[in-house]
Amino acid sequence: MALLRALLQKFSANEASELAVSAPQAPRPEPACARHLRPLADRRQLLAVRHRGREYQSLILALDTDRQLLWLDELFPRAINLEPGDDLTLSHHENGQLFEFSAPVVGWSTPQRTGGLALPFPEQFYMGPRRRWPRLNVFGWYPISARLGVPGLSPLCGEVLNLSAGGMRLGLTGDWRPFLHHRDILPLCEFTVAPGLKVRCRVRVCAFNLSHRPWRQTRVSLAFVDLAGETQAALAAFVVAQQSRALAAA
Image (cartoon, rainbow, N blue to C red; front, side, top):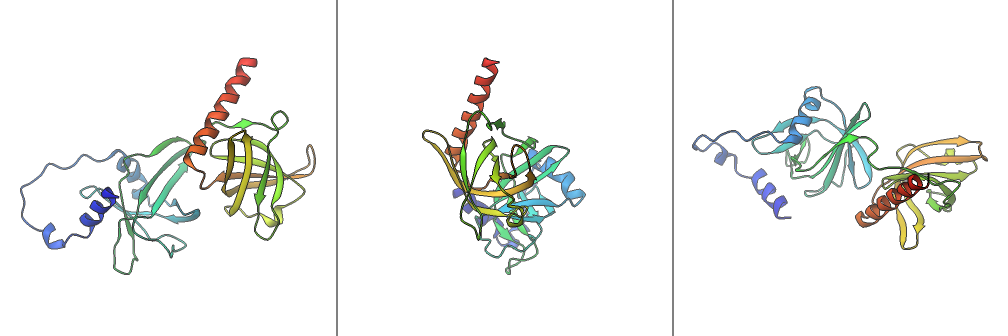
């Protein structure tokens, strides 16, 4: 919070003070994140933006390296309940590579909060393969049942087909495609991986299809939305341990 308060004070300082005569200073080195952002800004690349489980789009208006700020265009569709201090997660993937970071909103370009918003350059970001977590196929040898909440329906029960710390693929007996929509946030996904390791969170629908093998079922790819950090770490450790055990037994 101290960092956010300092950024807000810097952002809202009187413009007259910026015009005061001061001794020339050496330019700040460009942050590593800005070097990745600049090509996206130059070609006005649309970015995916996540806020409180909802997805938006935006693009970079400007990079202010003097004040260490990223200016982002208004979110589309418009985010009505956006407040100072709210975290946004920005991402862009291309050719199997993902660039992603999170940063808090520190201000708007106008008092009406329109025309763009400012975020500080993040100190940390991810740049690497789109699939960030190792994936474990569990169907047929390690049965895991799961409940999936779909609006308008009683919770659906299915079997986990594969699993990672970032998401899962679930098999639901029957055809549930009319009730699923790409990018929808579902209110509940619940399953127990092992004694003491229970997952309960919201999920985002990434993909789904109808399969007839080994029986008629809807296979749904889901991404965890608000999985607790300690649970995610435990899930990642479980996947790695099971993969290592399988390699040792091979």
